[in-house]
Image 1 (cartoon, rainbow, N blue to C red):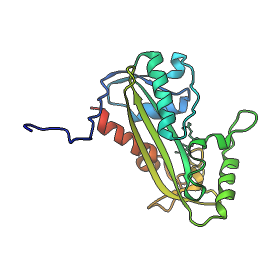
Image 2: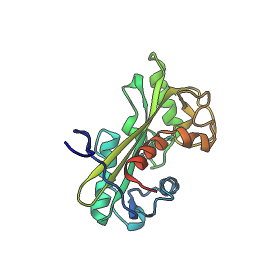
Image 3: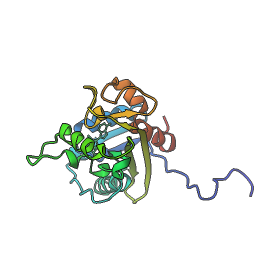
Image 4: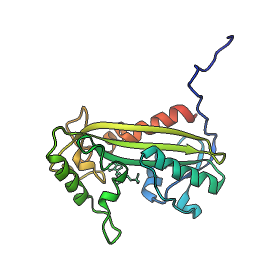
Length: 213
Ligand code: IMP
């Protein structure tokens, strides 16, 4: 065959053109964090919350599955490209739990979230098992109104620790020590965490495949 070609079985990724992009979330903290990661790509960001779009139920059993639900719902409703993320914490000896249910494990009857209690539950369940392998995952799905999607999964391996260490970060940060580091996510500076995290790894994949500065 003459000329350059894409290796068979490897589909080219669809580029995200400069213009409007919906962030498929109602969480203002996530909007700020993602806006910082996407600065410099000529994207005009608007959130699903600002557009008043409904929040779909996250009924899948994988991070990519749930991010796809959110991204496709927003892309179809807004008739614009949309980006969704779904993330969580997994412990090997608990068969990957809490995994896609990471936020649910912190849910309280009054609607608030208690991460101290959620971390204590993970530690109590994992304590009796051999091995401390754990990881954070971040799935990113870009969806277009025609139903096309591009998916990326960033993972940060490490170990779970107990008692929790460090006041920084959020969620399960104080009980996770990433591989190659002596500090937990909760003990690291934000700069260090953001350079190595599951989220940073997922965004690096997305940027390399679908964005042009
Ligand atoms: P999501 O908003 O449905 O993706 O839920 C993510 C869950 O995972 C929340 O409970 C977060 O607190 C937790 N989580 C995700 N990323 C991190 C992180 O970087 N550090 C600590 N907890 C995280």
